[in-house]
Length: 368
Ligand SMILES: Cc1ncc(COP(=O)(O)O)c(C=O)c1O
Image (tube, rainbow, N blue to C red):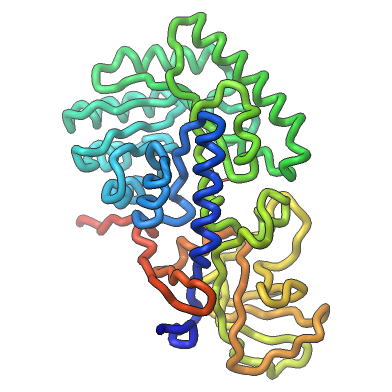
């Protein structure tokens, strides 16, 4: 039996029971509500976890980068890149995905259409397109529906492209699920209005792709949505729990750390700094620090250097020993996974398996 004691730290631990429960719950919810689940892989970046999601009924996966898409082609064939294919290298890398991949991209500009069309034509493949709408997040997406319709028509003119539907990301909805009613009603109204206009213009959307982890369990209330793309739900994190979008028991990923110093009174230092944890704040809820100890929730990672995390012990009676191990619930799990090479799957204290974070980084060697 391999135990946690054999692991060097910092190490990403995934509680397999929790992860499997998170995956099964989302699969059951989408099945119950007749929604297609297309999980965003940016959180786990691993074909092994994607394969589990697909085995539970996901229709395909969502990626942000060409590298993620390339790596996920090993797990499944239906890939959405929910990121504008702008720039010749990006469009070319997408068009060069293995031939078994059915590729869809989300975009919001005539430039992206031209770029993707050229790359797809020269690779001899057909690429499906979602036109992205801005329904309140104000990041990417077309805010004016007539402009979006014009883009959909433009897509239809390109022989190498197929207009498949519309996409939006409700990243501005970060309230606790019980408090999302007003924003979800606004989203529904905006979306149904947009869909009516698309229908009237004879460019009906086959797919309406939205969704996030905070809105996951209320996705069915966003009228018109056919597909959702939660990513964070696989592991969850301190932010997701702090806003009430999951329970603390649903946080599947922690960073195993070792206390390396208690020399300065009133604090302890762990070997988990910015290079393992990132410097992510809690977003959308009050919360100081850069992570919280699983075993001592009153203790936060208060400050960090690259390889040092300083624990604030002022609210705790716990006094750690040098060499003691702790587990940190990170503020934003997607960044933490991206910063680390491997994940270790545990059940209780037993180390059951491990897998690489295969799609981390950009995945391209410089060609000079
Ligand atoms: C376009 C898009 N879709 C889906 C997601 C997944 O959302 P969440 O992290 O809330 O699970 C993200 C997250 O960044 C995203 O950018």
